[in-house]
Image (cartoon, rainbow, N blue to C red; front, side, top):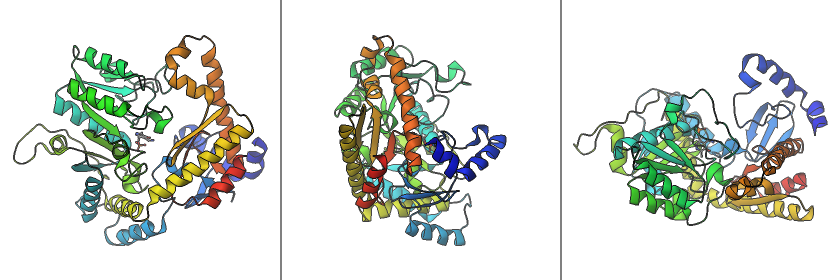
Length: 441
Ligand code: PMP
């Protein structure tokens, strides 16, 4: 596959070499697959991507999740163009689509009575934490080990891969994450111990988690885990925040909270609420909590949790979000993307069996995972594996191998997230999935 990159991706290579002079690492985006070097893309349409050298790829990155309809949906694009002609990109003032989008989200998510649009998932998680702290007058936030909720100082805390050591990011004074704790996914006793411990040090304002498990379910959760966390939050007076940046309008129109039938107090949105257009994020939740963003509701004055953003809820993002979510509902895009995810995963499982590979394939609808057995064991049985010296190294060299596999997939015309995660979309027909499986093989 290295030969492929050298021979077929010369224009990308040249541009990235120049980019390295001006952009740290030569690439702006964490999701960009950068081994042996990132490719430069020029066109996106439905399930397909084209690079600068004219090579064509099946796109299972789908920008990390927002494009449930597939890339660059033509109907949404037309609506955005119309608006561009009338309002331009931003006025800083209110626009009808902000209302329409907020209403649509509230109608679909039972726990969301109010919605405030923000610029990104990162910002929305920050806003959730701020509201939770103000509403509960408590300090601590508990997250699950290995979970990503954006790159803010307080939530960056911890190891992306638990147990490996070191922080996810340096440059954060320890005081910034003094009130953030991590517990291992699925260990409900550890969650309760942490909630109990926190009572003596400022209380727990909220537990924040992805209802499918950290990293879109790379560390999957027991089916009843969400409900048990809900009960513990009620018992200890903490708010439950669901991060539905990926799962919102991808797992179900009512999100993963609808799918698992567990109602959080606050919901963090991202990506899809602007239909994959820029400025994608928002916070939703019960009125009594959301009211803190406006300093009180119904004449009752409360303290205010300030959030902002010049470009947040701009007309283009709000309209793109509104028309995307409407089309997702009207065309059953979630069902279609989910069936494509099932077909892809079943095909990958068959390949794993045929070639007796040390891999695991599984999916939750349109969120598909292809991991090494080692990585899965590591995450699920972390405590046990800790007691086996030498295992860690082996597991991580396997994780590295997935990066090489990802580069090899790319050479076969398959874009994945780091070789181990894939998002399908409604644009993935049976023919496209079958074509992908031939390439995987
Ligand atoms: N939460 C989750 C679960 C995510 O997957 C991401 C982004 N991949 C974020 C938060 C952060 O969102 P953003 O990139 O829009 O800041």
